[in-house]
Length: 208
Image (cartoon, rainbow, N blue to C red; front, side):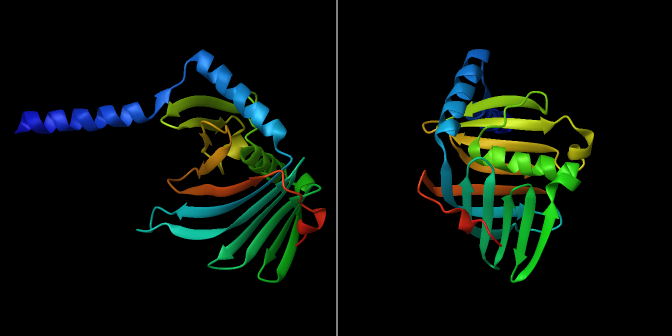
């Protein structure tokens, strides 16, 4: 019986390992090139998203959903629709927040941490954030997807974000999931779906 259990554990472990394998140097170079080529083609992007907030003290993740709109070079809006109306706009060095009609603004230039987070969010959407000076990056592959894990080198940023994981569709080389791991065991996972690339988007949409 013990032998069967041991074999079962080895089988499960082997399958888990097979699902996520480290890329070779050649695979990393090819992957980064594919992502950068794809990112350069994206002028606008609209996508639905579902966000899962995992808090260690809760038995069930908090689920929210909405729509994300991106327009190059750095205009970005997150519209939360369920279970509440809340939107965040990143535009012209400012973060504009509309919490069910209560509006506020943050000047990114006055906060180093907000500036870095803004850059990270825009980069994660476009997939263009392979900066070895900012992060220690590791690359993995699995069936149909590629995964890049980013550990911030900046000590201040590390207090807020322990690691960022971007999952890419292998065929399109675009981001399909963003996972932000906090310094605690909590994390936020955002799944992107129903993407529309390079549709016409008016600047007026990026208002709060």
